[in-house]
Image (cartoon, rainbow, N blue to C red; front, side, top):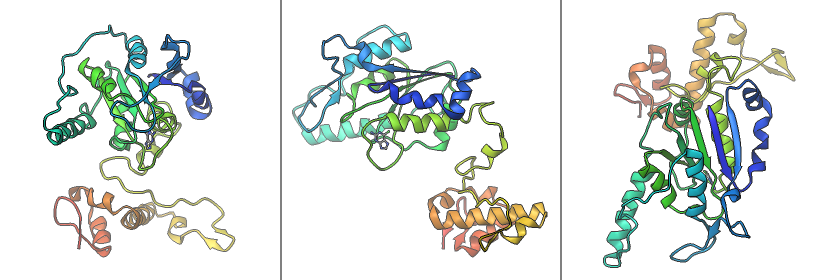
Length: 300
Ligand code: 6GU
């Protein structure tokens, strides 16, 4: 997998040479290159941002610098697209706003669920985009070329993702959570770690991925883990885990995962597929106050 990152702080990504991702690079599983966006500027100040059209605080990243950079990294020739969604319309302002909100939703929806391996995926971290999930990480782990564009300041000109979508590029925008960061660099590190650890050969133990929280169709929070000693500072490991009875251990862990998810993330319980629950799962969920007769559990 080839990964390009564009940022005004490319040094930030030196951390990617450490730990497992560093090893994966040495093994040739991934090739990560961090580029400095300012290398594509032509002015003496190397400016990458400008004031927002329409007024407001902060600065917005300019489309021209990004396009020179992205055209080069994506091997695309500059062109002009015919498009009226950003045209001036000074008549019905509210209708215009509603329309652009609608197209924003359209744009926000990540159209290409599964990236084709031979098409590059252009990813922009954006606090106002859909949340990045384990499913997105899994999908993106199948791509051959990922290109991340880190915005800074108040964000980037909205025409940048719009233009590259029009060029047939698989463009995605993601937020990593409901909080605001200064720029996309941390978000890109988070997404990269989630994606690359899924690459075949990246981790020593493939089974540990399967059992993790948020993985698979029936995602639950993971059960608690213990190691030896069985009694530490007066706190004992649950007896069943020492029993050697694997079926009992599995059941105990599954019930704990269900109970923990019920308490902390009932939204994940609601998303479960009832047809994939076994008899014991249903019994546990019913005891926790769920109705399990329909397609998905419902709170009684
Ligand atoms: Cl992707 N970017 C920024 N700047 N802030 C965020 C974020 C992304 N996700 C959550 N907060």
